[in-house]
Image (cartoon, rainbow, N blue to C red; front, side):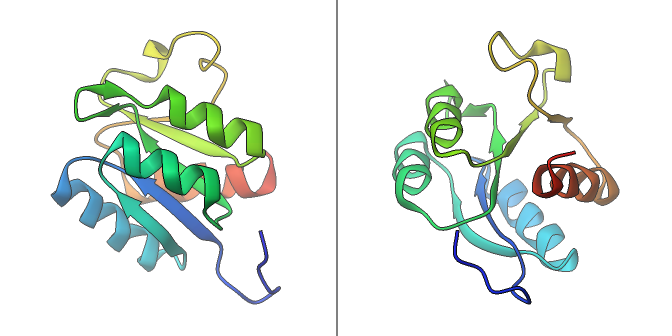
Length: 123
């Protein structure tokens, strides 16, 4: 991704519930991140994941009743880090995704911050 040293990291947000997506965008702005794209469907997410310019992604596990894993696979192939967001519990992720970071809904801004810092630093 082509960011200048002073540019805020750009993030992809995939969340099908509009109000939650808006809340995530606000939280990210408060934390100093730019939202490269915020989408609410697997189709949109797949397109942006394949071609978009961003540093990391936040992926809701269940998007419109479909699982996000095909989008996660695209990001993994590109080497783009991501965190899952789930209401089902962090341990609900199937293989091969259970080693990926996850946030349990509802989460606080500090938890989101820690997850993103971990993604961007490889920690």
